[in-house]
Length: 390
Image (cartoon, rainbow, N blue to C red; front, side, top):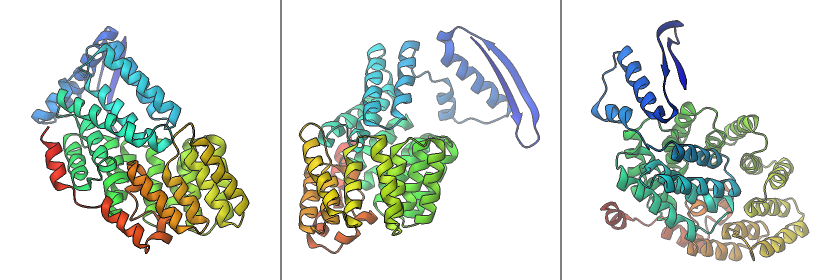
């Protein structure tokens, strides 16, 4: 394997340093460390002890495990239920090759934590597995920013421990300020949930600076604008994500929500239909159903409600889906009942946004709804301290 490296001053186009490295493929991590050290030396950078440790650290000695890990990350980035299942399989294979491969445990946790959000698992089944994987990674290396990020997101969506989640994300960013997912999930998780919109958007922008071609980061910055009620900016951001990948269904249904919140129901309906065509996620089908109800096509909405019940016999359908549909049909009591079921099933990816989700605005003054908000956002300090003493 030959690696050719050039260091160029972007402002002046001046070539500062160049070198070639001929190594065996099994030396890939050693080559990375050597290149990083030479670049730092060329720049006369003063590295901290933590930075020197990061440069010299080799995540695994097993190149096959590394290849499996990369495959897992490839499918994880695609963000569909079936692809997340594939990612889990690859991360498990990587762990099988190297049981002390901390990043593979992180990948496993990152996949489990998203499954229910893409209609591929019940949260009460997948969230504990995500947390266990994050804690295993931290047992192996407690300086790993990626592991603190996964645990931070778990504290948010699994335990509704927003203060503990924020601490974990801040620790992750302290350890590695350039880890895009830490900024992404920090903004899209606890900061957005507690209504710190400006800070959430700033974290989303930083994540996008670090990974400008990520479709999910691009789309989720739009979601941050959406929840902040900055609908025009949300729509503009979603179109940027569609330019990156027109077939990513997640972007289309988020764009539809922004259009719906602006009152453009017919345009929203078209985007919901696109999302349903692109993926069989039952949550998106529910969004289409509630849009039908709002444009007066009640029969179509009821058909989708019946369809969701049939789907629920053989796969996970979020209770939140039924809540949105019943709310659009004018059945607020049933909507609240389904949200309470959502709480019982631990559907944190939905419930963390109870206070801020514009789709739920019609319920905000309902006593039952406010009682649920109180349960979700009750302080969790004692619980956090207990979990943190791992």
